[in-house]
Image (tube, rainbow, N blue to C red; front, side, top):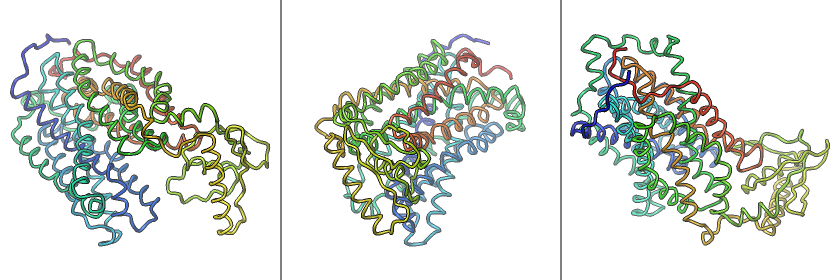
Length: 552
């Protein structure tokens, strides 16, 4: 039932609630992204028993482990939050997260303690993922239950800025430490400093959170003796609530997650990997877009209090689905105009027998490709060149056509290792020379990058992120009753963001590797966003006028 809007200004206590919740969540995201930003160095420190390619992949898999366990953290801490209270549960999550991060900074390397180092590291990453799975739901519920009617979108939207701010803070600290001590010292031991100093942020966050009061909605429910004795079975064992959980996942968080990861992570990956923009320039341009875009989390959160959560979130999914292809094409022209011109003038085509073409996703570099089709595609993938596939009759040796020049591939099956190595070098040089002649650049020319246009495009992508993410916390809180709110909202949020979103870069890269077209990875977020748009529009009700204090 709708209730009147509370027009009183934000009280000192409410400001404190938002600040404490946001600060803690910024800190947790800082911890989480710190590892991702330093994955290359961590690979050398903790996975040095492997070759460099495999070490980096295992370092990334350890990062992914944190995403994969997030829904389990949502179950564990969501249950505690609904049984013993919001305050103490998300106080526990921040301590686990902070100590896990601090210990990473002190953990001996593979060279010191052998295989125990990566095992402990992965365990710490999983603890961080579990803690983050409980943190977000706790912070969102805590702020929402302190918010006056008609202002929940505005108040909870501050929580939504924290992931972006945490990412920004981690990049800032790393850059500062790296600059201060130099690259050699940073790679040797200085990388530990950002992890170790996080203990200071933990101390501040815990001190502030200890001074907070329990949320009014939970206090009321506890005083009335209505707390849930079995929040997991109530949330997921009863169809009336399980149905809402499933709809929240498919009709809200899955689409929100892929738009979020596309705008903040895949865009950076696309700039550096596909468009070959140097890392520092790409990071700076993304940082500019984040600075410009972050206020819109609060703007769209506040707007959702007036026009509703659903129209804004669905509009963000619609715009993403409709505009991603033209926007990323425009990004190519702005960031690497030479590459865009070469693709338009001299298309690359691989003509091969489809039966001898294998799946080209080989992140560890351990698969050995011997067919002429596989060798041709591997060389192009290694050079980050988009190509079209044309089927040839059975038994045909694959060819790479660059513009009007055709280069026959070769079959390495039966060759000695030395002969194969020599042939590989000759073939790669031939392809590289022809690509250069056709205008394909080995990297983006810094002088030709239209930085204003790139920043504008990245800002648009971040704007879509703010549309889907700004109002989502308030909407998830409003979908579920107080007694099982923490548990029920946390699971669809973390499956959406941990699995659908967190696995986006890997999935998109696999699609690109298989099809040869650098834009085809966008089909993954487009399809997911479209499904969310349809399901959300048809089956999810608007929630902005819900009274979250009403009896269940």
